[in-house]
Image (tube, rainbow, N blue to C red; front, side, top):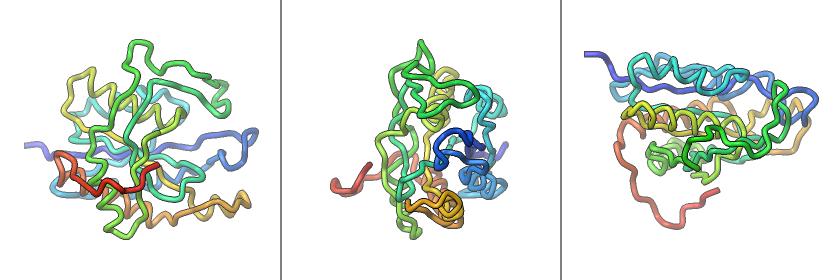
Length: 225
């Protein structure tokens, strides 16, 4: 019997020096997080960590990975400059609206998939994940908007491909803060989080995915973005 597995993805480099410097990532911490978990076993599931090449459309990067035997879950992650905590996303929308040009493209409100639904809700146990991250000592919240850039596109695409192919795969997205190194490099006064804490957050989140086939209840006053 084939061992069940979980795909963890991080985004590659993005942004150009022509855009705002805080949005230029020659090294994307989310890829480092995904690759750090590659090969681990969590709750009887093998973790496969992959870095998505930014100049590929999300479906071009994700589709081959979803064809190699359906993973139990896809936990994608990316960086969100300015966020103070790890945030587990609830919603992906069928919109591309970029803050800057990327590889000569700057969508301004176009749909990701003209025939796709307006939005998808994450099928991961997002409250269990954020709770597990906080219990691991990492600040974490639920976010209701993955924005309209590449991170949202990855989340929407994973959910859309799973729906189109009728896969039981649960999908969702986690946004990570800047690393201290990036904030120092750009001379910014924004928030940051050490890479080791980010890795601990994703490990706790994946553990919660395995342990919770459905989500948990938490107090209604939990802060959300």
